[in-house]
Amino acid sequence: MLCVAEHFAAQRYAAETRGNAMKIIRAEFMGLCFGVRDALTIARETAAPESVSIYGELVHNPTIQGELASRGFRVVGEKHRDSTQLTNRVMVTAHGISQKRLAILSSHASEIIDTTCPLVRRVHEATQTLERENRLVILIGRRNHVEVQGIVEDLSRYIVVESPDEVIDWKEAALGIVSQSTTTPDLAQRCLARILELNSQADVRYIDTICRPTRQRQQALEALCRSVSMVIVVGGKHSNNTRQLAERCSELGCRAVQVESAQDLMEEWFAGLETVGLTAGTSTPDGTIEEVARVVSTFGCIA
Image (cartoon, rainbow, N blue to C red):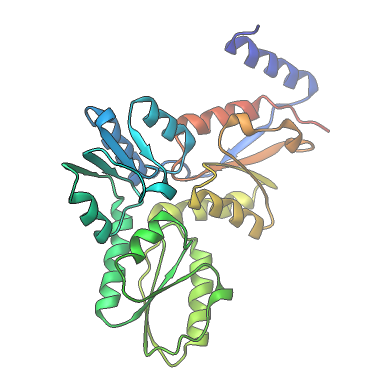
């Protein structure tokens, strides 16, 4: 059996005998954002992890989930948070939770370890401001995503909109609009335009809550798609911002293949290509990105 070094050497030799190795152009901004890095730092520095329940997925990435489980954390599935017995120490994920849910956890937990991204917290604050102004809150985002659920659980009146097609005339005097932090700027603008069109009688206040890392990665992707015909998007299957990157590629007329790790790669995807683009979601570890790049670089240009 070949060792790892021999395996990659054999792949490189095969690539050289077929043609030039695949050229990879990386997006200027990709991979872990500061919010995820901070959450991981807190988790890695937490003593006695076996006594801690992580309330959902710390971040939506299987590699990180595996790391946390191996350290002894009790990871509570996002679909089973209400029916699971928690330990006395509870870690809130980077996606955040509502104040109502936090109060419930605090009532029985001896310690709450909060890793909520500050940019997610900003969305919570914006919606609360809009509700205090007696506006119907319109949240642009994925209604079943845990970030969105955490935001709307503290609101008395709200609508979640996933696309411009869901916008109607809500016959309200005042509307307040925000976005899930990982919503693409293009989607937010299209939804906003449709809301203004169909609710011309309403006083509309829009607070831009799209986080800077998401905006940077979307802009970098758009630049990348002008240079390549196919982009590898690395990230977890449940990661909203990773999915948004792949969808944006398609909107720009660029083929996208989304993988969680190098194990998902199939060499036939790259037939006829000499150059491919590479980007990754904000919850994708650096090591996973490097592994994908290393494996793709061993693929020769297949006619």
